[in-house]
Amino acid sequence: MRCGFVRIVRVLCLLVLPMCAVQAVAAPNNAARAFAGYYELSNAVEDGGQVHVTMTLTLMNPSKTTVTGGIVAVLSSGPSPVLVGSFSAIKSLPHSSQVTVSQTLTITAAEYASWQHGHAPRLQFLVPSGGTAIAAGIQAYQVVPPSKGTN
Image (cartoon, rainbow, N blue to C red; front, top):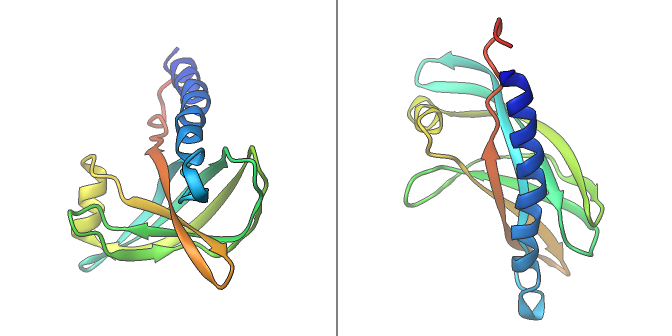
């Protein structure tokens, strides 16, 4: 029963998030577009004051333009965010489509604890534009898989 509820929530989020992001895409002069997605954290291993954790991100491109060579930057959750990691370049993210990527990050134990208590990392998509890159926001939420042994 619970698994069915989680699936329904995921489907609703997949339908609603891109609609919200489309409004940001319509900004004048091709201003930084908003992307949507969801992520899961897994395989967390503590190593002293650090944590190695795998982030799997499903990134959706609600725009009418294909993005080639974009890079997802992961920033800390604090009031003055700093870069804590990044994903390899995404070869192609077609318009009105999605891609799933994974990356193992090494972050401080304090930052990981913050993420576990509802303070999400900030995600930005660095979109190549001419000789530079535009930092576009990613509206993302964390998916927490059901505990093993529950239905």
